[in-house]
Length: 277
Image (tube, rainbow, N blue to C red):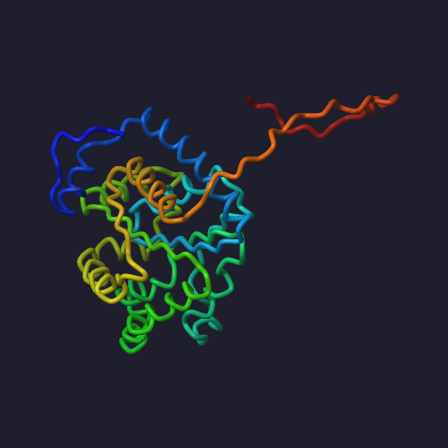
């Protein structure tokens, strides 16, 4: 990993220092490869032992949630590591018990469910944008910890991550999205309004932490101005929180292919895609 030239003493010092000392690409690639190997080992253990894991990613727009989730899941099976990114609730879901639609996505034995935003929408965007009443918001903060304790009592390992991006870095990333045609889909009117309401979201985050950052279900904050460093640190932390062992598998050896037994490729015209490259 990259070397620091000073020793940070507070959380804010760590966040500021990580923003200044960007991790080099070669170091990132080398360390990520190691972490991916460990994630495969963890996946094998989760399947073998029937573990149930929930990983929640929250943070402001452009904090780096999507990139971190991609780095977490790209080397493992989507049948074990399931990513859940729910759209806004429909008319029927709005009349349900708030947590009801999340229940269907919780893991069965041998699964890791990764929430790209979660039930904490109520403590963030719904609160700030007025999509819930004050009573609904207060009820969520009052009951959320009990809900999470019930999940843990059912055998679920619950990990909650908040990606912390600075005001300056968020603005730079939002401007980059505006200028990159591949990323304009990430900019909804809601995102633009949320960008304006930086301090409203800060107050909502602080209230959420105060109510739900508790011993049995703590929040883990990931400084994310340096995307590479954030991904490595977050994945390493997940690996440290899910107990696993390396299950040695028999080495795979490819068999000899069968003989053609008079098989010939048919003489036919194929509808090939145009070969532009």
